[in-house]
Image 1 (spheres, rainbow, N blue to C red):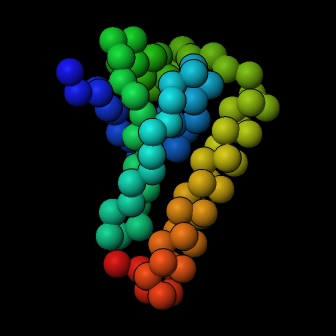
Image 2: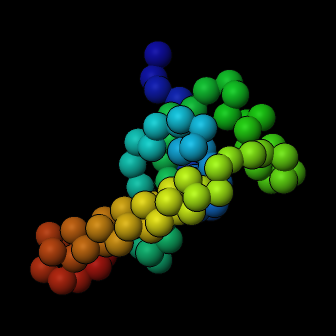
Length: 91
């Protein structure tokens, strides 16, 4: 059975899911540069997503901020890595 995946461009939701112990599999980038966070999915993720968007999800505030910073750093590392591999040119 193939692994179920969930993708979002919303960094706030991605940080929330990380704090709910969802494994981040990878970050995909569109040619426009927009980043998508790809997570393992399961049956509880949809309910957590609704809780987040309905302002019912609770997390530790400093941990949430740390996750956003970490995700931004991963986006920037991913971009720098692509530039160095492609000789300074983005696709």
